[in-house]
Length: 320
Image 1 (cartoon, rainbow, N blue to C red):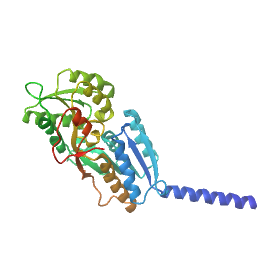
Image 2: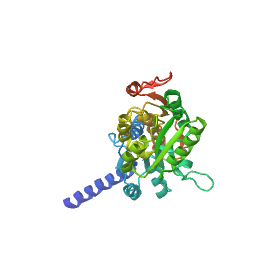
Image 3: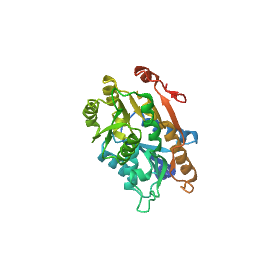
């Protein structure tokens, strides 16, 4: 009888634990690759959850984290694992993670960050509607115009027409869209754009060197996952060639770019985390929908500006 009572108590405890585990929301967070700038969004996301009272420290959420390290098959496997674990929601960072998630599930809410609009990611249906389970925060390409237009104001051509170089990943929809947009803008601004495609991060060094050999006056780092992952390689090559780097991504300025007008990556993740917290609290996506980035920044790198003798206009904040 004593043993029976002990077994019953163990069963009750295990049952209670299982019930408790099931009642705790599970977040599957996936980074497509390792990157110092992209990681700021992850920090912002979990800071927003904590601000709203949700953290693993308080044991009222569970987090399953995966980083695909730039490996597409690993990215797919990570998303499939989240699905098999029946996570409460997925948090995706950046666009490659978002695309993979919505391609694999229509039921689990996906909260994106550091991703372009659903239309730019080519995940809308024939009527132009985004996936019903897609939430979080996106960005259009409109801010690129402001960033790119800085270059002719701050850089003088060595000779003749101003030549600006850029590389883009031809397999990423938003990168192709950005390149086409920049090409149109360059024509309007009477800038000669020298653009070369890359397939992956392994190509970046050689392609960047080939680009710099074409005597460009400046380099423009567009919103591209390959750019994020290889930015130090690009910066080193451009610094050696004495070519200033401009960008549309505020997070890249602290890594050496001269100036940018773009989203604050930390706040991007924080904004997505606010949405996720509302979902966890209400246990419903009612009233939620994906939204645009709310906070953009004009920033510059004092050291880089000094190196290239560039005077930054008023209204730009220096990065720390």
